[in-house]
Length: 187
Image (cartoon, rainbow, N blue to C red; front, side, top):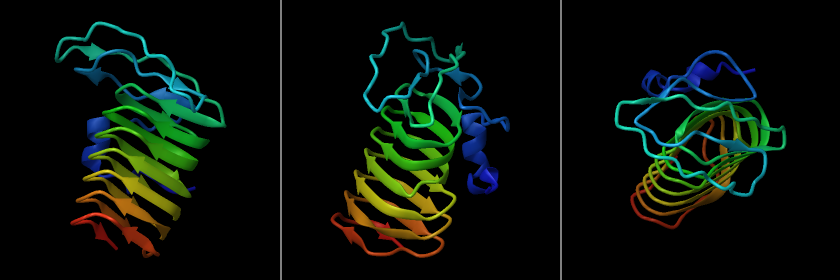
């Protein structure tokens, strides 16, 4: 098993309030200035979101304890989460931070999300300003958006980048990535 904390910059961990205890799908710490309650679902379909009044800025929101099955985890509400292994990690919201074990596939469909995974053989990002750090190889990568960053501790295989100002780094190298945008850094 990889040492997860070695993969994440200290500032990201501090901002996310990441603790060291592992759980199936547990929000981390309190979220400041957020609204609603972080939720997770074992379904790939977007769950119905509840409409709750926004919390005043600076007021801590104590997240609920969502559950997740081994098949997948869907996160839709801003907050910080720590999850175990799952077949699909689906991040469908903005401002979500998640630290996970092995995910068979990671799909980010939001903006300003931060994801750290021990392993994620397949990755698809649709959005802007997202960060993904993977502690192993990434076999396939697709990015459709701007200002996204993907860093793998292993090799990144093949894929495509459509959008601008994206960064793709593989410490073990980067395979055939089709660049369909401008000012992308692949290598």
